[in-house]
View 1 (cartoon, rainbow, N blue to C red):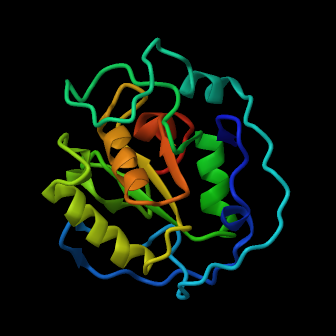
View 2: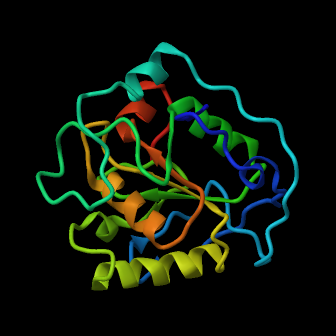
Length: 209
């Protein structure tokens, strides 16, 4: 379900989490939050580590299309060109998650995660929180980075083991790539880039709000 290569860390697969409650109605960085988050960060700053089996890799045709190599090399610097165009098939310091992997994460409710919408369009994946400004080019020590760090610090309650799932339009959208790089450079260890984005989610017949 998670690609490429390395298995998702045990904390993401096995950390127990209770039922999610309502979030705050407004946040200073990303805008209005969803009232029905897919999951929440744990209430303790010390994540529970347990041994869990490695997930099976998603080899479906849909997943293959989502991770298709479009001939763009991955890079560690923020993208400064047009935000809509072919993207890399991997991201340094993070992992790519497919639609099937995200569906399993959302439905399983076995691990703490935050689903972040970097597109800001009229529709979004249920449970997502807006974090559109994190798409901005710049540097990893600019004001956007500082504000994004404060937002994530509050949203994760300081736990950098919490999985962050970031998405935008499709595999031809750099906005979530930039946001994922910013999260990686803030020290978050489970950054999952949903490269297929809202188009792949909708194509799979999944609901939007």
